[in-house]
Length: 327
Image: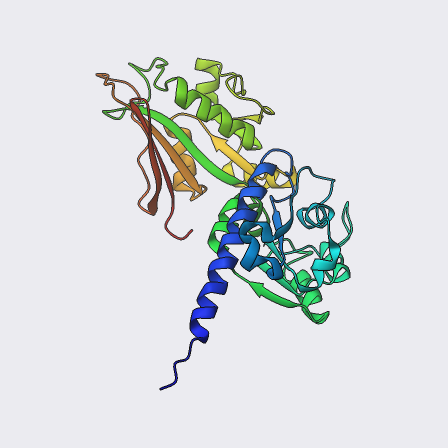
């Protein structure tokens, strides 16, 4: 009796591909502040000849896109390789398709071809018009094996801001509010501190990672919010106040034209519901504290087309993150 064991080798190969792609994602996330407006990208170079005896030491090069205008992930990964003789049999893993155009740096697809690796594994295709499959096509035409779509959803999620901006021509929109256990966002229409120290830090970390933050004119006039990152380290987001004479479609176009890839909405109920009714949201972050009030402004109604993405407790408060069902 003959047993076909090829499927087991395939499974093992896929497991290794996922393992090294996860490392790409870990590396890429380090560029959360410096890489923008470019996407976050991580790259790992593996020499199969070392894999059996060296385990994780089979990784001979790593890199990520640290800062816009500087070397891309692939450039930094190749620069870290000490023995380039290993490249002829190596696989390079990249969380996003290598670029094929001249921007502030030369095409990474050309660098990969020049270095002569045997195989390229790509997490997801770059939606940017000047790339969009061209990098993969160029590498394949050079006779290099290319695998596409390993941990594709995870790779797309990491760069959801970049993808949304280029595919929908608007920022990635995060609706964010804090409410009491019985569904109010203030106390008798007066400002109420609902967040605790932990969730304040979390909110300010989010601000440091996004391009802009928006409140409605009522919130701005009543609460005079600073909208900065005083409880975290990083750049302050650009501040936007939504007024009656700024229709949402026009605002989205203005933000797109100014290169704003992500937007946090922290306004009151009316502001949030205007975004929800227009379908202009990608993520909702709702914080609930175990306190109650007898009257005030009701929290926004969650839309019907949501799915639970994450839920965590910070002290006594709970932060729930929702995304659209289609995402």
